[in-house]
Length: 387
Ligand code: PMP
Ligand code: GLN
Image (cartoon, rainbow, N blue to C red; front, side, top):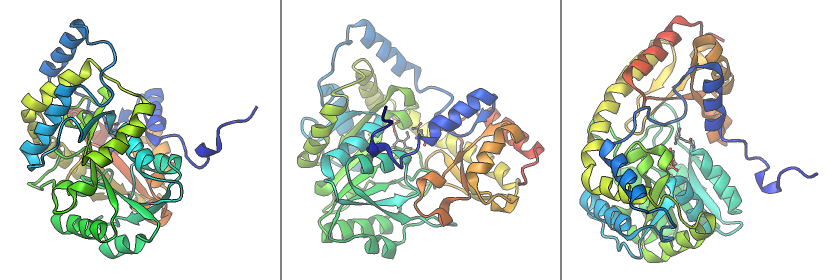
């Protein structure tokens, strides 16, 4: 019997599944996969329970229920002054993961090139490949992990169709600033490119940093698909309710692909997320404050271990370089870590084409209770972590 289809060649299993399974099987503290260990607002859970009991258990409309699309539109206007038509410029997706898939499948033809920030979130690699696209990474380099505008320009050619951006950026924690975003916008306009921008961590920024959606820059709304998710915004990662917003002609393409992936999902969860968007902004404001404290706890602790730590401006991840501990390979380090220290972290080399840039980098999540982070750090500090 034949094994998998050729489209899976060169696409390794997702590292998040591998590392969370390792945490479970070893009983290690999971500072790997990014999911909060405390759920989002109880009132929002109640809304979902009410919706289940009220019989919202059949298919939702393909683009999402009208009240959620309207709430997403209000959110975009309230935070960013962006006006979107809920009927034609918003689509609800099965997490941002499906948004990424549908945007790439709906907008990229075989042979089209997709310029993507590297390290790239792992589903980007799989979905660019599924679409038949060609990945052109632009590396955010240590120690600051800023956008190299010359490298970005050099990556674009006549075959480029899409710029795939992520800000705040997983796993570097970089929040692209106005100058960097303007450089992206200038290039997109000059070369008539579509921009897909993954902004799932839009509200999780620190030290007064400002998240600026690409779609707010002059001339950008009409060429930009913006993705977000209730998973990150309201700490309901298992609900898998995300959304895409943008001009009708691009959202039509996203929906064109999305309707054949899941058609629809989360009927009873969608009204709860609509409620959250309208009434629970305080949740993510507060989350950003507590995450900043946890970031500081984690980063200070990691710095004491003789690793170079990148203190993130956003997201809930911190990136470290483990070479000073004698490890050239972050994956080997992460595989040894449960036994050495009872902790799981994520090697990010799979998020890089340029192995020189990424092979030794390891990501740690701080969307965990302070006691959990402190316990993980204590175990790391007590362990022999040298290669
Ligand atoms: N994009 C990025 C950058 C992420 O970190 C994640 C992980 N949540 C996703 C997309 C996927 O989001 P969702 O869980 O809503 O599918
Ligand atoms: N986005 C989360 C992370 O980066 C979870 C990813 C996943 O489980 N697919 O850890």
